Image (cartoon, rainbow, N blue to C red):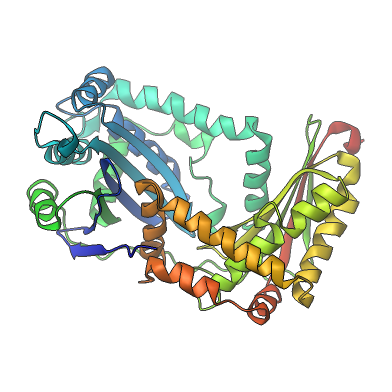
Length: 426
């Protein structure tokens, strides 16, 4: 793969990351803010980016702001929330055309920066409070986002697994906050939190596209300056070591049962055996050729879907499957047998080669988009590492069968969560 050169500069209050590439037709600006997950702040923090992107001092209505984006050749602005390890991540993304491809050569990159600066530093406020109407509108939408998780039973069961598995740990907090905490947010206390976040968060600006580093630095310096800070680190959550598996069954009016199993991998991004864990997950449940897919779904016909995924910064692996309520015991048994098979080295060289090839293709596909590239680069910020993207592939391809077996034997089943229908609950 072509080497990705990420140039990082310490600016006033944040780090600037520039990737110069002519691979994309647009230039992408992403502002990321990272803070420890906390019960006190999670709901306000989840609301804040939506209030900021809704309007600003210069564009006091959403219609005016969106109209200006149209004037910038259909530039896009959106916000996102994420949870990585014990951190709550807020993202603001602006994607804007590269003027090199337009007959009008107005400085769109600078205009994109000016808009980002407007959104982040000149909100729609009166005195020490956000615009009341905007806050109330976004609070209603936030409640809908929280409710949507409960309406989507696949997402709901994964959220419930994490709540049960990580009880007492910050990671158990939902990324959109708590519905019962939304009403307590006021334009005044949200503005107070906005000021605090921009003083305390670890902040990073990524600029990816056909740009020049020096020009980007000059524009950024002129438009975005904040107080210097020592970013807050999440205090290591105390993980309870279970002597026996925590089994939770919840009954609702669902036709298809949702069986979710949570494992502690005891490995996070940056650990020497992280890449071995990636390959392990691919063989175990990550792809269509995996043991879970073949043995639980294809051979036993027990599941409508069966897969596993990693939480790279928390050291978790989640197995997700949809099953008939009556098949619970058999599905759990077969899933546990697949883990035992991995721990004994019961997988072939062909499975190993195929999995490495799929992971390699997945990484290459991910960096085909600027957003995907950013996601991979940002792992280093969360984990405080400096792992080059090229080594994701080269180190992964070197992984041996013995290293995968060693990783498999570090993994412990922690919690089984089953969302079952009312018939099975009788």
